[in-house]
Image 1 (cartoon, rainbow, N blue to C red):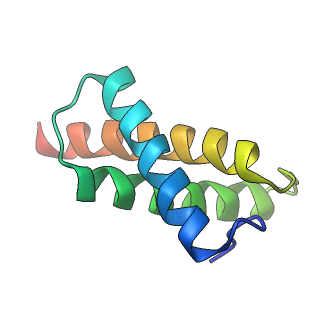
Image 2: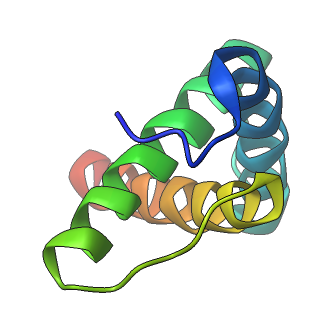
Length: 84
């Protein structure tokens, strides 16, 4: 898992914020733990997909927050499609 130079603790904190922002943006109702999971997993998956496509996202907390937010939004949308 690529943490973009933020470390494990930074990934948890930034992932939680990214997941919370995605929850507010997508108007879903999830808890704190799920927000953290969505933020971290969303950032890791989106970084993997972008790297496979040859796109370098950079490093740092702001990049991790943006990628985590986008990845969490995608995961929420996929979850909604599966549930329906």
